[in-house]
Length: 118
View (cartoon, helix red, strand yellow):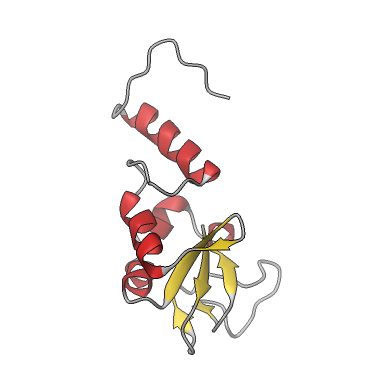
């Protein structure tokens, strides 16, 4: 999940968030102003969805999501965040939608007869 900081200050998410996975940086844990950062490189999907800091940043309008190089606005970002791992979002993101489908099938929320996924 890619986020962009649209505020004018550093936004702290989690010390595990790294700008470069191979290099320790004093700004690890932060999304810098105007910076776009792929959180999935340093956090699991569960950690991303359970992050109170990420949720607060999205709901307060400091952070927005980026999908296929398109920067969502605050309302679209809130909608995508609220869609969670087991619901469908009105905003299509192939990776999230595929992940949501697999999660729904594996968790028993969805049963599909004669379905080919691929």
